[in-house]
Image 1 (tube, rainbow, N blue to C red):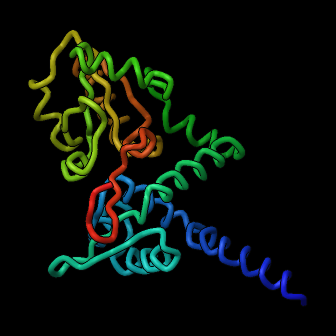
Image 2: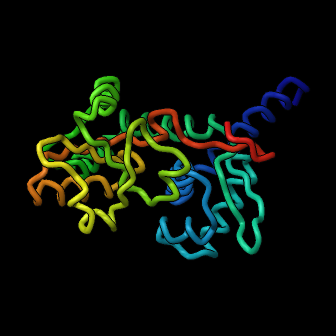
Length: 224
């Protein structure tokens, strides 16, 4: 094997490390969760419905490919996305899968079978309406994720608090609910609850990652 062939093989081998690290469905879910903000191993395990042992194993693989970073804060190990390119990678690979895989398209149709949904093309108009107070944008993710990053003019109302806080919401205005992105069901559940209570509610399938607002910290802890 000549030198140029060895170098070429090495280049493809290094690129393949990213593919190998992201080849697990649960590792992809962990990447999506970290697009919402930094989290502990325990928090990631809970949100991904896996054991801490398995979460730790998956995170080690992601870290070995430099897709995530971690540091220790007291007794907890905190993980975060390595940089914004990882967020873009997640959105790109998901979008490619949605474009090419019929099975995924069918699954998404079942997931989003609710009355009203805003498309990505509505971003600019949504921001204008929210700024004027003509619509209410609800972030139904956990408070910690809202504090890490949220959409313009959104107010935090975690899904588990929504039923007890309905009195805070105005009737007569459209309420737009969003969560972690198109595979997240919290906003879907929120819209269903709101409509049952007589509110005009719409689901926004995009989250902070899709809007390019996902929080990413550098290794020295500076927000970028």
